Length: 211
Length: 211
Image 1 (tube, chains in turn orange, purple):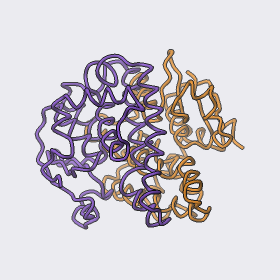
Image 2 (cartoon, chains in turn purple, yellow):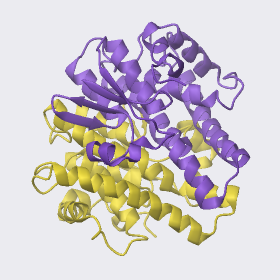
Image 3 (spheres, chains in turn cyan, red):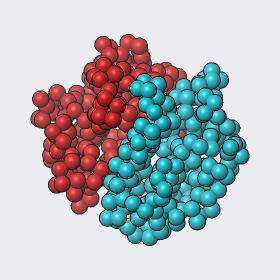
Image 4 (cartoon, chains in turn yellow, orange):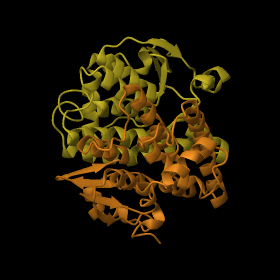
């Protein structure tokens, strides 16, 4: 398995956590997003989306972090990254997707740069944009988590896809928020996750390409 | 089952297609997004995310269209909305997520309105923003679909989660693009889907709340 990765990409961070939870080794290839390596002809030939992460396995290249993680969970079922019952699976996926669809895409680097280029948005205006979507998204997730709070993690005492998405988004939030105290349940889950070695080993600063 | 719906929501449109493909009836409750009904205290008490769709079933309320569709596929397996092999499932999910994470969230109503409010973006500038992400996203998806083209739909001769996401996004694109001819494989799949009664019955204009 080859993981195309970048230390600061929170979508790649999700896949690193999943690989660690499964105990799966992957060869790493680093794509420097800030230098624009994802737009090189060589990389676009591999992945027309021009994004990381991408996982190459058995001759297939899989794009999109959640598709990669569901694939890993289907092909390496232990430990499971989704609970057993359909209703619980739906809850976990809904938290993961609230982050992956409603917070991260509007706050990621390519959108912030396009705000600058299309509207001349200043750094301050881009920071306020970023905070707006974090607060809107985390406020809703906090309510949903609190309503079903049980155990150390988003749902129960084993990490799931929801935690895998929550921690990288919390890392992003902490670039502009001084702490997570506005969202106590998110803060508690985040702290619990960081005590888990699979999460700790996946953080941006621990990666070989970290700057 | 109760579906909280809005005719113009492309995320709700996805769930309508999935329910039709499964032959599942759902009571419909309409939440008028342009009137802001999703921000009413009553609706936020049900769904803190303040978004449609939401599916209420067996006492649980499930948010996020892809979580709802995966739940429907797990609880009502026929006809399947994902192929059998993990690699094909990953391909289908990656197309669905490229739309659900990388095009739709940056181009939806709440983001366009926030561009207006935060940056004073004119209608023309908002239209150009919208087109930028459609072209970027559809260009990549066109390459990925063309590389694996086989059969009437995104993958093979049965509709999957990829088609369920593609058609509503194509409807959105056609509000500003005169046709889909820049993306011939997407255009062919879109046309094939609209001949399928499950898709045809789910289009915005066919809904009871259509204006």
